[in-house]
Length: 180
Image (cartoon, rainbow, N blue to C red):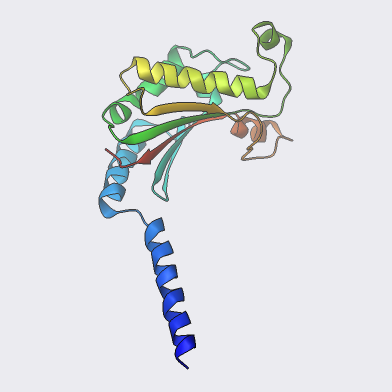
């Protein structure tokens, strides 16, 4: 009789620990929520999608806002859009800023190949690196930033339509950490 009770108590304790481990502290949530509100006010819906979920704040920027078609260099419009992130990001001291680049599955054209880009993975990496470089030039702490390209490996839509491919070409800036 005692054995099932002990097993139940132990199982309950384990579930509680797992649940508490996955929770976000109220102060961390409040800090991320404040950053979320600030970014929501800065961006229009056609420039970025901003999501606060599971202790992370993710800003997804569509590629047409940042890069010319098939390009990887930031233009003036891109810098203006990214500048909206700077007030929020430059004040962070303990929050990691992760910039991820993604592409569709269209093969790399001859123009990019002439510039030394042979794959969508390389293109997405160059785009993410360019965003990080610009943010750091604007005062974002380089010790908190990282960039990574994923190429076509994590689509959010079908690559069978132009609309789906457009959704897959994106930059995601994710804030992870203390929120300050």
